[in-house]
Image (cartoon, rainbow, N blue to C red):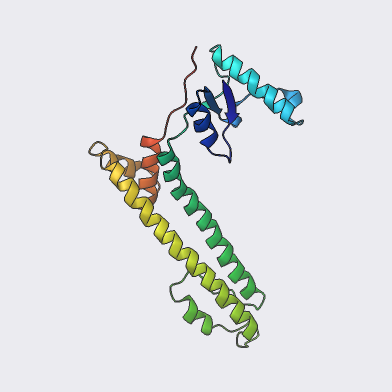
Length: 211
């Protein structure tokens, strides 16, 4: 019997152990109670001892020991990649837009929106704070940044289309009226609502203690 924390390794270790006859449990590390004296000290020995004690207590059926997760299937784990990739791309879009705005701010230009559909045409019309045309090398740098920004924007659209198609198929099996009732109480846009419905209705529940 083994126990390990949810982490960047994903769930392939759990599946490998189970396939070889080893009972494996995956725990949410944030749910493990840590003794006060161990909160600052963190070593492999302390972590291993804590996990072992947690597993023993969980096997005895002690309440509120930890929250064991139900590892997703390979296909479920793969579907999660879409929302994670979208979040990464959104952060990249923010970095590119902030970079462009920062470059322009150094020339006294504050009225440029990198996300405007006519971003390239608008760039040609800009003048510096002291009335000069855009410096040539700065303009070239911003255009290359716009190239990267537009790539990210295109990839966001592709990911969102893939997400919406995947989730809409699954939501077709929900009871009639569920979409309307959720939409009336949620603050999400339509695509975000679809993803939120998916998380609410299709996420796995916690693993129950044997006790």
